[in-house]
Image 1 (cartoon, rainbow, N blue to C red):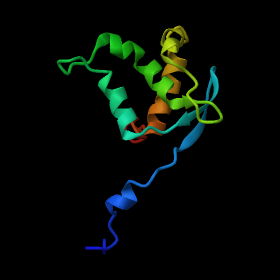
Image 2: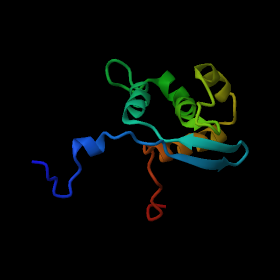
Image 3: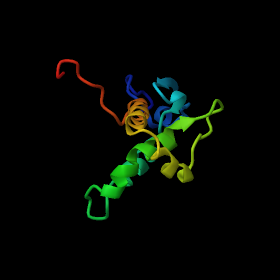
Image 4: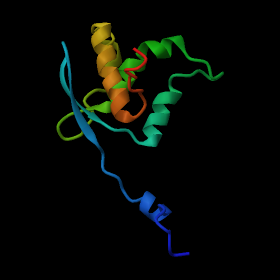
Length: 120
């Protein structure tokens, strides 16, 4: 069938996608540019959080915020801003500020959850 009746075809789905960027201001840290993630990048981030038995790693949780920051923060041209060597440096920053940046990264990448105002 050449007619898709309005539904997405594989050819349409797999056309190259452009990255989506967002600028965020984090109080006490500054302004950052974030990129969205591919499904492969998101799966890699999620996989790093579990051990071989499928349990959350304590050590992995410590650097989870740093890891999402590293894979989402970019410079003005879209190049990654940080590298793996920066994990330890990010972990020396105030926890609340790092958590705020990580949350912005998670939300922009589609891995986080918006707060429900009705719950609060």
